[in-house]
Amino acid sequence: MELLWFVRRGYFNFNPIPIGKFGSCLIEIFVIVVMAVFPSPLSTYARNQDDPQPPVSWVNPQLPDGPGLAHHVLASKIMNHDVGYVVWTPKDYDDSGTTRYPVIYFLHGMGGNEASDSAGFSELAARGINAGTLQPAICVFPNGGRSGYRGEVEKMIIEELIPLIDKNYPTKAEARSRAVAGFSMGGAGAVRLSMIHPEMFCVAGSWGGGMWRDADTLLAAAEKEAETLKSNHFAVLLINGDQDRPEAFTALADKLILLEIEHLVVILKDTPHNLGLYYQHTGDRMIQFLGDHLKNNVTPIIRP
Image (cartoon, rainbow, N blue to C red; front, side, top):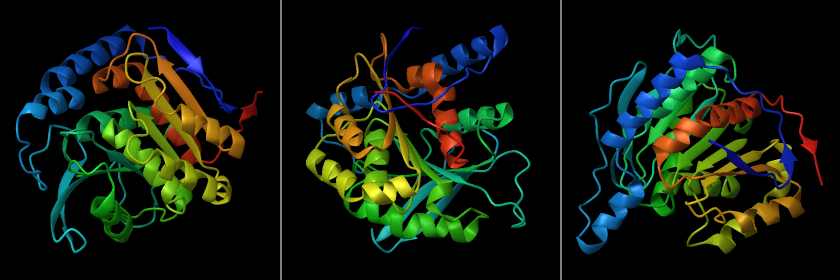
């Protein structure tokens, strides 16, 4: 697949990871399975427009097959009910406290839950660790319901879940060792959380996200928190398909140019709103981008 590139501020060197014919076959098989088992959140949302939406299931302990995955329940005082979340730990995980790990928070899309993307994204993370593009990291998958990661869910993640993870796991409990990424509603949520809470994250990534209900709030937050974002060496990767609102982050990209905040906008050719296709064509790129910034070893080449 040909990629259409729109680099709005920083250009980051990228070396593709060779995977060979066998690896390509595995990716294609994986994408077919993901598309068959997990329908597009956008199509799920569209189907529900004429029908009353069922209540959100906040605890979903049944996990897909995948090594390193464990389901947990947060007794949220903010939300006044239990909330499920999934934690993935890498191969050879050391829980003694001797090794400290960065953490990637991955936010699901509309219609998903804490289990939806845990196997797929953790497989990408494992592949990145094996390839050396991501240092060993913990991945956390919270249940965001249909919240847009606003309101009580936003507070639950920032004030309850992240401190709980830092307490119960040997993490590097600082912004420069936390990333947040997501798909669709989760992609929008990842960008929003990273801008509004710059003290919490150093890098964000979005697949198929955009600025929806509170674009002005997000733009104002980017301007207000610009110095904090830059002091954390913050960067954001914004990936959309050419059939998936390719202009969704244009206003934010324009603002980030003015603020001189590192970002990369990528538009994929012939790509609709489908997480399986984003995994297939830019999964390794997303992991490498997050990994590079978690290590703080990126030297951007600024182009006019």
